[in-house]
Amino acid sequence: NEKFFAFQKKSHQIINAAIEVFSKYDYKHASTDLIAAKAGISKGSLFYYFHNKKELYLYLYDYI
Image (cartoon, rainbow, N blue to C red; front, side):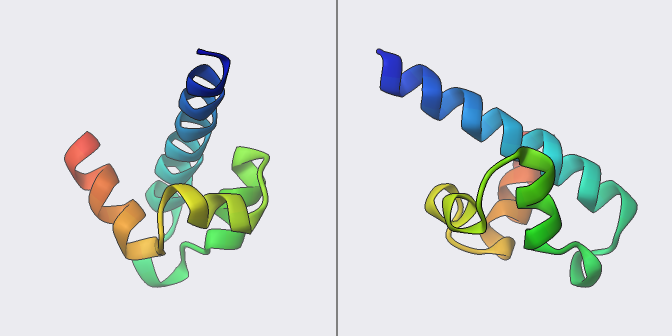
């Protein structure tokens, strides 16, 4: 259960950071470096949860 909650927490951090970044910048200029930094994780961790920027963007599209 602890791993599951850690996974949920991290994914919510990523989602919130990505919403913030994509709301300020268009897709091309919304950097994964900035999303990772705002989420408080490494870029490698970001790509563990979402394999690329497009996958994250499309997930947010459905999420919102």
